[in-house]
Image (cartoon, rainbow, N blue to C red; front, side):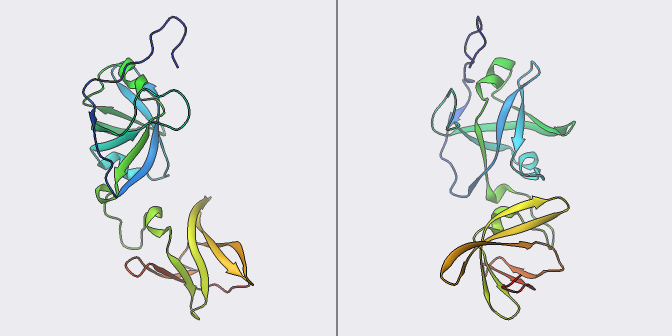
Length: 197
């Protein structure tokens, strides 16, 4: 939307149509223009936005809601992305003024999973845990990770599980006291947890 009396934002001409990579993960959305030199604010889907800072190739798709200034997938070549007072701001080679940045408002930001920085030992990207099966030390199937929640100082695994023939949700803290092992290649997490907890 543009303000009364102002022209609608025009998409930067240097943006290229692109194919969304097969391993692309949605990591955030462009919130709004920031300043007058083409910078824009980004709302990250993660509390640790390292993928946004490290990748120099972002893929944009329009939001499902609101006004659209483009369709399909566009490649945005990032010049710089940084933390600024608790927010993420970025600038791109193709975006050189406020109007161009405003045209990107609402765009969904995707980054290939292969571009994410390597996680440290015993650190995992949430996206890699979703879909893993969870079993306890006795081999009892606890369910499948459907999502993760940030609950203050800890993260919680939210599992889809079956109990007595009906679907239910189970939550297990993702902390060393309860998680024995994460086997990404084997798509399995072993926990010290009982079905009746």
